Amino acid sequence: MVINQMLIMSNYSKPKNYLKSLEMLGFGLIKILKTNSGGDFNVIFQKGIGFPLIQNIFELYKEEILDKKQGNSIIPLDDFMIFLHYFEDNQGDITVMIYMDEKENTVNYAKLYLISKKINNYFYSNASISEIKNICNLSIEIPRTEGIIAIFILNSYGSPYYTKINKIRTIIAKCKIHISGFISALFTFSQEIIGQESGAKLKEINFGNQHFYMITKNKVIFAYLVEKVNPLIKRYMYLIVDEFLDKYKEYLQDFKGDISPFSDFENKINQYFII
Image 1 (tube, helix red, strand yellow):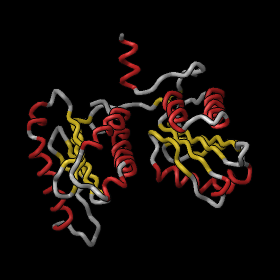
Image 2 (cartoon, rainbow, N blue to C red; image 1 turned 60 degrees about the vertical axis):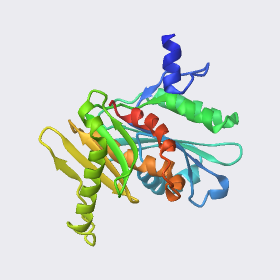
Image 3 (cartoon, rainbow, N blue to C red; image 1 turned 90 degrees about the vertical axis):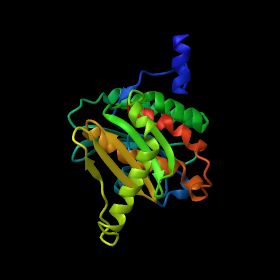
């Protein structure tokens, strides 16, 4: 019974040839179609790594990938290490796996390669995109972090799209409508008083033991009430912004007030945060 409940909660099932997962900070899977060999790519799966970083990595290593069509690269960044594995399939498309981890971590290169080969074999076997996403999610684990008390995603008028509050914070939960109005007022203040032309935005408010972080993009406000800040929380806050806007891009363009489609964003929040 316990095992069944865990499988239902994860929304994923393990295949028979399941290989024990590898812990990394992030993973991205992209596909370069033969018809798009001039530089376009499709993101098949990502977690723990944002689209802007994927885009930058691809632009830097595009020529090498398109020229070699199969190989690997190690990219040292200021705070992270990036590992690339790429394979050409029998149709001339190129599958690229992007792994991200801390610089000081010891990486199991053999296991990394086995996971890349396994994912690539799924493409060769004409597996569905959902099956490929499933195996990616099971193969790579990313760290979840504590410290977030509540997350509010709303429009510039204060109408909420999605809210998640720690269950033990009952007082905050009872006041969530007032908090949404407060966040909207802060957004208006930052835009009109601090200065629209300069592009300045109010990003953080200190409440002593708690902090409010606000990120605005495409007229959507992302507000995080944080008890204990760490680098992982800050990185994930920006990932949540990009992934929400990408997932609901079309729906937001023609939003008519129904917030029920946003409820499944719970899975993405739980992927990054322990709330």
